[in-house]
Every structure is written in C-alpha cells, then in structure tokens.
Image 1: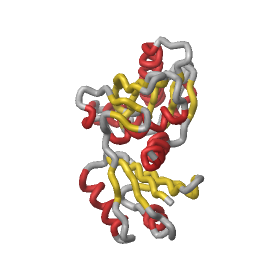
Image 2: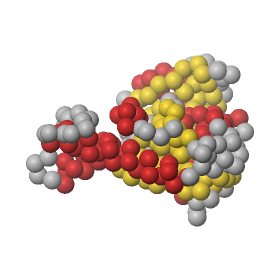
Image 3: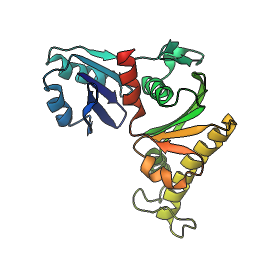
Image 4: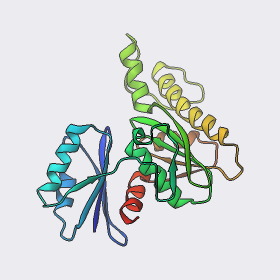
Length: 236
C-alpha cells in the first residue's frame, strides 16, 4: 500500500491506497492524530507527499513517517511527468500541490481543456490544454483569507457571520457575498479565456462547498485532485 500526504497551508489531507482507496482523511498540523494512526497500518511500503506548509511542517511529517521506518518522498514540480508538460518559466517554482493537481486532472480527462480550480487558503486557477500542456495559472486569496484581510485592514468590519445573498442588506452578508462572488467571478473569467467548446472546470478544495452555488460554467466537483495526482506519480 501507498500512503499519500498533501500538506497544505491549513490542513493535512491523506489517503491510504492500494488497488483501491483503503482510507482517507484530513487533520490539522497541530493535531495529526488520525495520520499517526494511519501510518501504523501494516503493509505500507511507500509514502509520497507534497508540502506547501513550509520546511518545519515538512520535517515534522517526515519524522512521523521515519518512526515507522519509512522515507517520506516529497514531490516537486518538474518539466514533464505523467503526460503533463509544465510551461512555467521556471518549472521547479510551480507549487507541488498545483503540479500534482494538474496531473490528477489530466488523468481524469486526458483529452479535454481543463481549468483546475483549487479553492483552499489560496485559490489557484490553472489551465491545462487537451494535449496535456499546463500553459499558466492565477493565484488569489482564498475565500477565508479574503474575509480575514478585510477584518485586519479595516476598523469596523465583522470577521464572522454572514450569508450569501443576492442583495445583502447588512455588513456581514455583504462581506460573505462579495468574497464569494469574487471567487466565482475569477473562476468564470479565467474559464472563459480558454475559449474551447469542450472546456471543463474541476473544482476542489476546502471552500468548494461555498463557491459551488455560484458556478454557472461547466464544472465537476473533485474531492482531492492533489492526492489523485500523487497516486498517478507514485505509479508512473
């Protein structure tokens, strides 16, 4: 079995996979108890992960895995892998999570033009052509981070509460609706730039539930494209 780890800015997502998914979950960096239990599962032969949480978090996770006598192999972006070509000006500077998500997307739809929308701490919008070329992407603050920035940068705006409404009539609703519309608007604008009849948006990440009601383009929810991509990399 292979243990796959996606160490994000906010959470650790993991999956234990053989021929099929055996188990999966998510936990915080501060309390990775579920991951500790998973690591003790007999039969794990390999551990593969990507880390955008920084070197300290990476070292902590590597130490957890090492206690089981295993090496945590960190994936980084390269020029080409699993049918995906990386056209970043400096390919190695592409985030490992974005790279893995692109590979996961290409495996799901190997002959379609795809917008990979990862709605996490940051929202990333990456364009993948039907022949497997990553031609560029956008990064903006995620939904929660947008709200946090408004609270930190102003004296009287609320940090909590609020609902998505077409015509917000209080400040909390206005903030939630504005931030969600900004997310959906960015996704829609980048999607339309693809200008291909078969284009599809794959929406993933922790804020996908909040953004989904505003999506008016062809899209599909995917639980965790990063782990899907890591699985493909492990078997390449």
